[in-house]
Length: 239
Image (cartoon, rainbow, N blue to C red; front, side, top):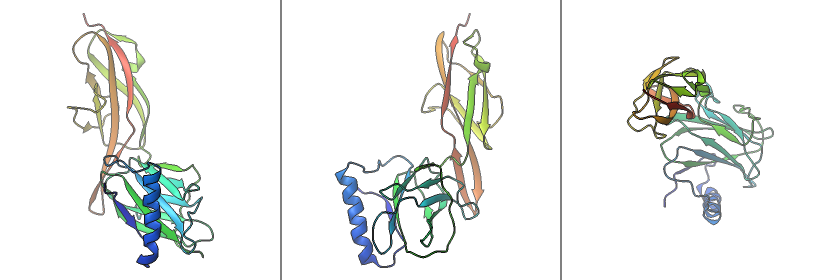
């Protein structure tokens, strides 16, 4: 099995090899091999000379204009910070810690999990990332559906035509809705604050899944940011 990775921050390839091999060995030993289909990013930080994992390094994921646009996280005792649902686009990773010189690395993400290894020399200077919100970051760029109700939360409807009432944190450009959790057969639609939805035929309990996204172009690259999926249920008693 091949694990996509990127090694940077150390021009001495011979000294970087033992670090990389030890990381891969640890992943195999503890069963932490990253799955091939998810879009998550792991960033492991080492001390340049000591080659020891660095804890409490602030790691930001974003763009040159906003280095923390897609989240920020602190490394744990193993020197690892994790980001979920990373958008597929050219991004910038910034790592900083007091007493060390910050590192910044450009990264083109894909639809597979990746492990990026950085090493920080002692000293100071460089871009500053601020992260104090835990060990894991998120790639949703602040886009989240904070409230979702079918037809204002009524329990029963006599018509299959309902409304999807919701509140969103962030600025979406499109939405999609479906009774299938994987959104099979559902296309992205231009975002509206109160979209309509037609329930499937047949009386009974219906679960509707809802998600929004923001699609933008930055520096010639298309960037898509997705919200986590939310859901609500309603009972159809069509006469």
